[in-house]
Length: 386
Ligand code: ADP
Ligand code: MG
Image (tube, rainbow, N blue to C red; front, side):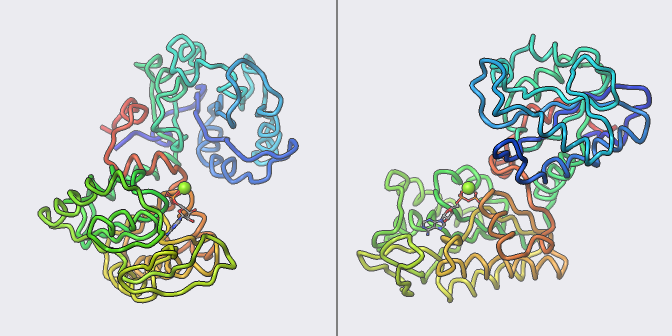
């Protein structure tokens, strides 16, 4: 377990806090300020206890060759000031209670993880706090070089990072069985690492989405024109065999909602077993949905990453919705449900099921890497609880 900001004395200290203020901005206006809102509790716990904060974040993808107005954090400073009801200084040499540094990625040394850049960021700060889970898998200067430079000073997790680690790491390592993983989405290549780690750890893996078709092809099922990663068929076959030997049951779809192409107006038909040529599997079928829902409803721990179909089109959203509802029901009965993946989170929001899940991760790439069991240097540098 990692020490958190709540556990350190911040009175009279300046906390250098890596936050995720990478919010969508259009024509200088923030279109969704949830990331700023979510950072408030970590900032406020410092201010309430007499500490000061220097906040740092990236925003978008500037070139790294200096200031670009389009990627300035200025609108964030304004919004943050309103939300905190406190002055936010945009001058990094200021001694105000809340200072926001300009976009870290204006300097190419941020992404390069440069030590000297890390040292310059750390200057004048007494405590390091990481609350940017979405970037935790990246060894950027603000994530790694800074805490390395601040060795000997307290280096702690913010409240958002604490929650992500609690669910994506501890809950998964100490999962109560039956432990079910629900995987889907676009590509099996994205999720092979996660499947390989989960085999032998979970009781069953339920697989839908486009990635299911590569696995079905590996089993010799005819998949028509469904998306497939030919180069991964052999590896998928091997993986299915290993799963059997290690006591993890892999459930694949056995009926499918199909159409000639991915288009809302494309006429949907249900096919069981083989899919005829000319049709693509775009959602798990009704029988599969009810079988997958059953498995989820009986689970005590569920991790979900990747939608079961092209949920963006109503005609191909029923599988994802059915499974999401079942996970919500299981959670209501006491199961722990952990959702990762940007599109999965979007699907849950589309169905209005956000409050039914135990934890919806804010970090797509980072959450998938946690599922793969990877250790993050940015996290390992933070102090352990004693
Ligand atoms: P996440 O962001 O949750 O990790 P992914 O990015 O892996 O999920 O995949 C999401 C995308 O996969 C969605 O845009 C969805 O439309 C697409 N998808 C799901 N099932 C299929 C399918 N059977 N055929 C084509 N695309 C699919
Ligand atoms: Mg995605």
